[in-house]
Image 1 (cartoon, rainbow, N blue to C red):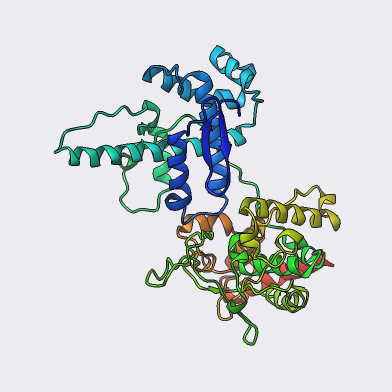
Image 2: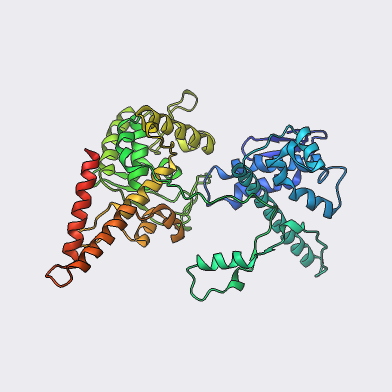
Length: 455
C-alpha cells in the first residue's frame, strides 16, 4: 500500500503514510468489526475484511476521494463506483483515472470471483460506516434539542430499486406464503460488484474416496479431525472448539458448547473471541462408520497428544506454540489454510486426482455429511432412504433451511430408484404387489449395482 500503512497487532489500525495520522473511519470500523459486528461469524472474517478495506482506502487516497485534494460528492461517488473496474481491469481500463491509480499502486487485474469478495468487504464497510454516521447524527440531534444535523450520504450506498425480473426470481424462490413483488422492491445499496455465474458443481467430498482419505491421514490428529467433520458435520471452527470434557467415551457421545454462552446469556462469558456461528444443537450426532473411526483415532491421538493443561482437544504441535489450543495459537484463517493444504496433500497421496477430480477443502467434509444424511441413512420403519431436510437442518445447526438444501441434495440414483419403483408398480397394479415390496426390490437392485461398482 502506498498512501496508508496497516498495523495489525490484534485489532488492526490504519495510518496515513505521509503524515502518520490515524485514518479514523477505518479504525472505528475495525473496532466495530472485531468487537460487535461479527460476534456470530467465522473467526477469519474480520482478518479478511480489514486488509480489503485498507486497499480500498489506499485507492481512495490515490484518486482524491480522501486526502487533501478531496473531490466533490458527485465525483467521489463516481470514482468509488469505478472500484470494480480498478480491480478487474487495472492498467487495461479505458478510464484514465483508474489506469493512473492502478499504475501508481502497482495493481494487477484479478478475477471476477476475487473482485466480488473484495467488494463485499468494501460494501460492508460502507454500510457499517453509514449506519454509524446516521446513529451519531440522531444522538447529536437529540442532544441539541431536535436540531437536524446535515448528512451527505454517498448515492452508491442508498437502497437500489430492483428490476421486475429480479423481483420475480426472488418471489419464485421465496417460501413465505402471501409474498408480493413489492415486498422485494429494493435491494441494499453498495458499489457495483461483478455478476458471477452460479456454481452448481458438487461441493461434497466423494463418497467413494472418503474412507481412503481417513486411512491415508498423516496422523491421528488429522484422522480425528476429518472423521469428526465427515461423520458429525462440524464446521472446522466447531471441530477445533471441542474440549476433552465434551467427549464421553463410555457412551460415545460428543457435546459442542457455545463459547460465548449465546444460547444461555445468564452464564458468564470468558471474554475470548472464539468463532461461533449460532449452532443451536449441543449434541453432535455422528453416523457410522465414521463415528467408530473417530473414537478409534481419538484413543491413538490422546496417546500422542502434546502434553498440555488445556481442556481443548486439539492442541498445537509447533515448537512456538506447543501445547496451546490450535484455535487460539494463531490467526484462524492461517490455521484453516494450513489444514486445508494438508487435506489436499493427502488427496494427492492416494491418487484421488488421477480421475480428474478436483481437490476438496475441509468444508467439503461438512457437505459430505449433508449428502450422506439425505441419501444414505436409513431409519428402521421408514420406507424411504435418507433423512428429511428439517431433520438435517437440526443436525447441522442451520438457521435457514435454504442453507440445508445446498448441503443436502438428493442423489440422482435415489431419484432414479424411486421412479423405477413407481413405473414397475403401474405395470403390475392389478396383482397382489404392494408399493413397499416394489420399492424394496428396486432398492435391492440398486444395492447390488453399488456393490458391483465397489468390487
